[in-house]
Length: 226
Image 1 (cartoon, rainbow, N blue to C red):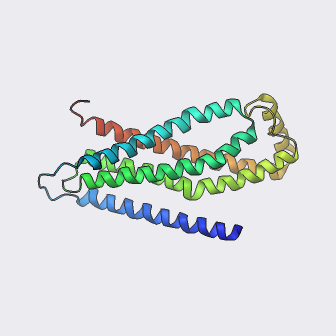
Image 2: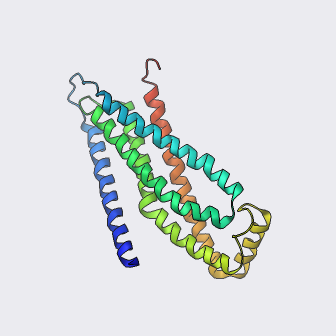
């Protein structure tokens, strides 16, 4: 059963990655060669509604998960409870984020496929593509890897009665972790590997947020009024 699940996850991840690459390729081609110089027709209300719903939902989710729920959970739960919640939340967060960003990118390209793309349009499309790639790399590669590392790391901690009691950021828990790293080479290596990939994950997440904010800035600069 576990082998079947891994195979299914691998197939799904490959399909998601191929979809990402095709979407990015279409977007890049449209950015370089898009438009025939004719007067563009404005996108319909449904396309505009779909686009704004997708981008605003993703940005709102990014801000909430990254700057609100993460800190609240970190300050109010034990280390293992915090990790257990994130094991289930991150796949949903990055998976849904990838879908929303793909919708935003696809509707943007569709809305502007009949006009010559200037620098602003290219920056906007590139920002959406960067955010999409960041989310997809997370859900396809980094999140599954971190879940596996976290499972092994927490097992060692439970065997040493660490992490199940006390807040995740309490000095007592942090001291116990430092002592465990000093005496257990396997745990120290696992902890170091998790810290590395968690740092990369955080960097990709912040990059995705920054890319979406850049897109929103360029989009709102074209508004005549609210």
